[in-house]
Amino acid sequence: MFVRTASERDLAAVRALLVETWHATYDPIYGVDRVTEITDDWHSPAALKGRLTQPRSEFILADDGQSLGGVAFASADENGRVVTLHQLYVLPAMQGRGIGGMLLDEIVASFPQARRLVLEVEEANFPAIAFYRAHGFTLVGRTENCGKDGSGIPALVYERALA
Image 1 (cartoon, rainbow, N blue to C red):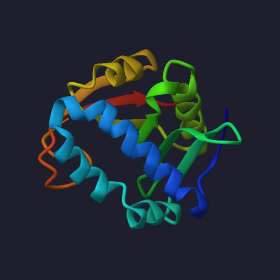
Image 2 (image 1 turned 90 degrees about the vertical axis):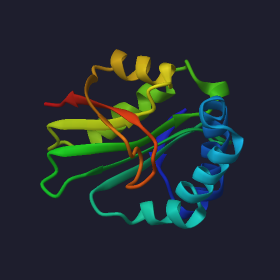
Image 3 (image 1 turned 60 degrees about the horizontal axis):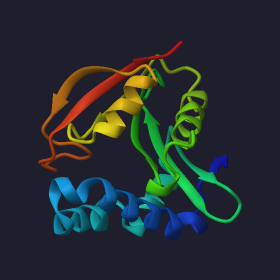
């Protein structure tokens, strides 16, 4: 796998990766219908396309030349000091192979002025929590609206100091 920047031609494959990963991860927590509703909104082609041109952001993929194994998206605040990791997902069949770490390392390297990396994670997503803890993140709070205002999805907020 190598890491590269996402492009418009990747959006259908990115959406498929996100839908598969979300159903595998969140169906047991929220049910198939709710996960479908979320992925149709958050991972629609239009939503994904908007990430390609979002200022102060990185939208990257893990690719083996034939298929995608993972995706990450992060954005920085106006002064570039705080970066929010909005997404880091690896296909279930590809997990445990270092792909998540590669994507995370590239996100960190993409924001050299950043001092903090923050993220939200569903508190029942134990594998993700273990991953982030293993990569130096600490629990700093909670939110009732993970992902976007009004989502109604509670989550834990983790942070990692940079540089």
